[in-house]
Image 1: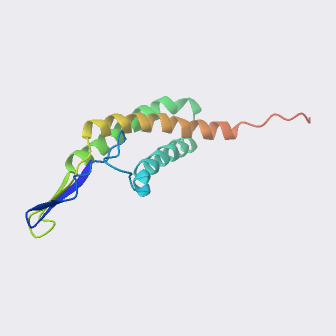
Image 2: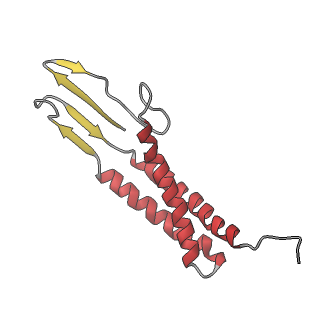
Length: 137
């Protein structure tokens, strides 16, 4: 969630905006906000691709993902929990702005995303390394 409500001379200017994955506040979100979702998803797929390329044994996927997913989820959750940003005095000392992720939701979604998308990246490498069947022999 992130928002700002600024008091200009005793009046409130603009609504407090709330952005989330489930509902994008009052009005349309900026298209760049979707990058906040797309970039981590692509990073998780790339992590799975990279992990598979480095792993010698294809059956090590479960072990790798059971280590990587919780480590990533805990790291992102801690950064989100301590990264709450509250700015006071935005305009003439009378306004405020706040940016605050929901730590529990960050943990759950990042754990699932890292596991599922990491497995997808792993599978993409395995699928591309399988020789194609051809009718010519």
